[in-house]
Image (cartoon, rainbow over all chains, first blue to last red; front, side, top):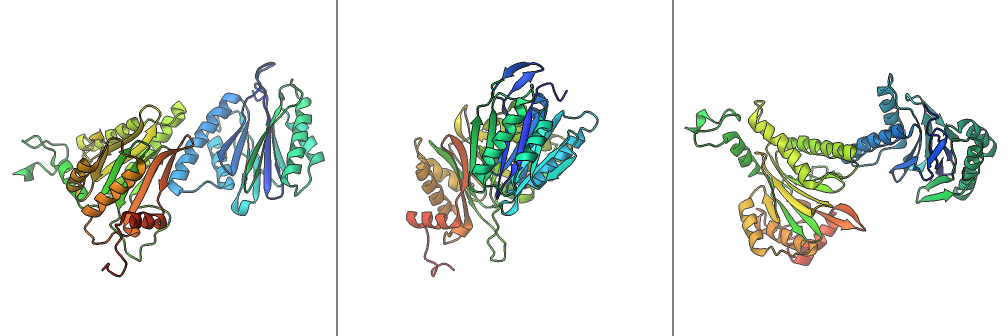
Length: 202
Length: 249
């Protein structure tokens, strides 16, 4: 059921910045029905979440997160820290322990003093914090390999963009359920750059 | 004679009045004034702060102006604790609508649902009504900028200019004289500050006794902006309303 729609998401940490990238294919098993599907959502200027897995659960989970985050913003009069947000997502997923959302979230954000934070979790909320990169989706095994090989610590934004794009494109080429280009967000303390990649369009 | 009929909110008096609701409105008459003005390009909300002790730690939070959602905000007059509950309810209702329909809640529907909550407390449950009046200012794509006033009875109305709290009658009549249909946001700010200065008890008008908030469109998105004390002082000076500090007692 995780392989129904196909997805590939990766997030990497750089020097005072992070990048999060996803593929753009939406399929129904082997048929591609959209090539511009958005998997990465902005929660606030310094916090992004990518949702891999079943597309309907990803969209609903995102809407629930927007609900919770907006109320938090109104009541606390500030944005949520990435660590807090990760705990919120984990709690929401565990609430449905015996009838889960079929999603794997990848959370990436800039925390206190703009220190990059990334984490992923499984569909029932088990957090996996990492210092270098996290991956999710049907292409995750290839992504692990590609990232492990290409990652270097403390990369600047431009180099990070190149690395994450290469890792994503080469991994989705080995996975028939993900691909059709890539969508990369590179976030530093001062700006957010969004870029579309053209890869093997299949 | 009214003593037999005012202890329960759920009972009418022989003259057909709900005394508890009217007493609630009395409570609001003692609170700081708030004025709202609808203009062509925005809604202006101004409030008079009642508590201005030097010991009060004023952080970023405001006393009279609250944001309900990105496109709606409100000014409060009355019992603050009651207001907090209602504001929280309004916020959750707005988010629930957005979750269900994936678009912002229309302003009138938000006011209506909040007033339905308030009305419930006048009809059943045996609980007292909320001692708060609100001025809601917001924008939606159906009707543009709107201003609504609601009171403890659960009634609400759409207004071009309205006042709640202390001296609201005087403020309302002043607004009736000076309001023009095609007023701009800047003129509305000036009018609101002028009316407020005339109805306020204190002799001088300084920026720490007021709160000013505006709802307007900026590059296609609704913005809610609370005026900072520095810009508020400058505004007051430009309209000629500030008294020099030496004169203020």
